[in-house]
Image 1: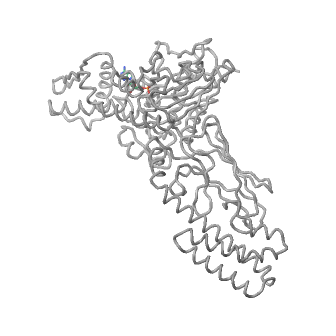
Image 2 (image 1 turned 180 degrees about the vertical axis):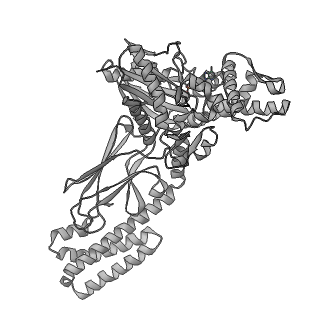
Image 3 (image 1 turned 45 degrees about the horizontal axis):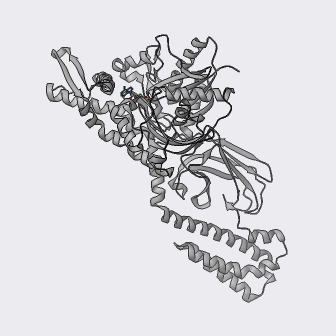
Length: 605
Ligand code: AMP
């Protein structure tokens, strides 16, 4: 078995690390730099990755791709608005693609260039080929985003053995697995994303109790606030409008980022930009206090998700033992102060916040390689998963916040006599109706033996592996026919959507419940009516005229109730029909038909 490396594929920067005896270490390049900017630049038949690419942000903004992690596993519709903020060209279509000259690249392809660069760095270091890696992903990455990350690895020639959530990796880097038990909060403010997670450790076992955050909040946004401020200030003092000049804006962005970094250690810092054509140099000194005022609302925006994460974990600040800071933006003093105030304790920052995740990935790689054997990592699914059943109702198999890896199994049946195939529609979300959830995948299970409705047994299994990837299998028990998919949704989902999906499920709980009850009652009524018709055809002569009339009238009443807007009258009419057919059912000697009449246990597909 070759070496297994740990990779932090970040929005702004990426790193690669390995376990050096018992200590995880980041692999540096020839210049002694560990961080590789997650930037890829294209030129005439040439390509640059990392620092060299980052330098081209100014000169070739349209051909230099950054923050591509934001687009991983997403559809173009999801990023349409955001795409406008980037100087490179996106192409309309079901998946996100970036156009460079004649060529189109997907986010996994761009990320693969970054991974390849890291892989080569490790190969130069070890002087041997590297083929296996552990890659970290934000805790809230959905199946599609995780799959896209795995794809990026594959394109780069890496077998991604395991993907672990970034906060879990950070905890491993701190060696907190050695604690007998405890609660850890991981506050991760990187370049493009903000994540907060509450983890529980028990005898070396990690469990993610809750996660929250915002995929659109980070150092990039802080830079943007500064850029906007400076552009306005330049206009105010020199009447130069740079707001539509991409080259100038990129230059300002780089200077603002430097300014921001300086303000983390200095009380004041200066930015200066020469305008040779106008024979002037713009200068501006910014004090840390002014900077803190400017970014105050942004830092405040991270507090809500922290409170929510604590609430979801049913824990208060006093019950949290350790707080870990991750991501370069946590070097900003005001961020640290706010985190300390919220969690009522000084957060850990002994490990370089830029390296913690990669170091933890290396620890996980070592666990897989067999170096560390006593640890298990548990994560949770952010949203519920289920399948569509008759009438567009969701049948939930795995609930939100279930610890992964996990699996669930349920039996379903057919709705129509002789039905030889069923459509399996996999959905994600908290609402009762399919139309209010996200569609993840669809497939057909064919080759079901023709039988009366309700007879086939179709076993649907959901399996979420340790990487959070969902595998759905449908099996016709009688014929043994099986069909399965690995869910690879074309549309991604951010924290905001997850939040709003959960919020809307709470807001619509009552109406969802009513709608579900109505549809379920209608479905059952239709099935029962069909069965009763069949029973009458086959055994109607066995009962007397008054009884026959009562059955007919009950059926008419049920048909009328089905048209109504309420489930209770349907239930009443169903009961009446049930009572009026009991004698007929008893008379019918055909046991299988009896089964059909009484079998309402399985849900129809
Ligand atoms: P990451 O995704 O963790 O690599 O995050 C990098 C982000 O941290 C970028 O937005 C950097 O500008 C920011 N960053 C790095 N160092 C500092 C610093 N000393 N002060 C403020 N922000 C920083």
